[in-house]
Length: 118
Image 1 (cartoon, rainbow, N blue to C red):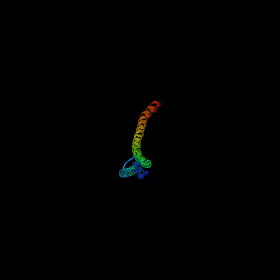
Image 2 (image 1 turned 135 degrees about the horizontal axis):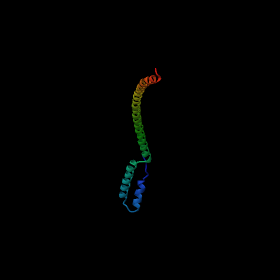
Image 3 (image 1 turned 60 degrees about the vertical axis):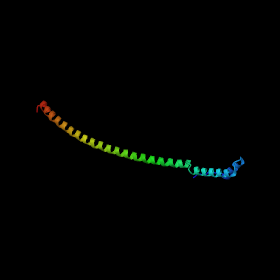
Image 4 (image 1 turned 90 degrees about the vertical axis):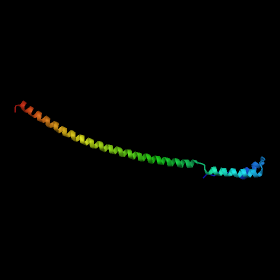
């Protein structure tokens, strides 16, 4: 992953320069070097976060696309149901129109005949 420059020898020399015994300075420098190494290996970098964000966005887009497909399918089903209902209603209306025309003809034609004197 990332690298961090930590000079343990320089750190130990600086400790010695301020009066820390050499053995103690070396142990502390080694410990600090190990700690920095551990934490650097476990750092979360911007690249890592960007990659995770891209993965999440891709998953979200996939889920939205799936949801859109389900919604579109449901709307198509509802449209088909409405079309079938409208076809039945139109058929009934055509039948009623013919029945009304027949009734009107049955009433109007004899009335015209009687008025005309036939």
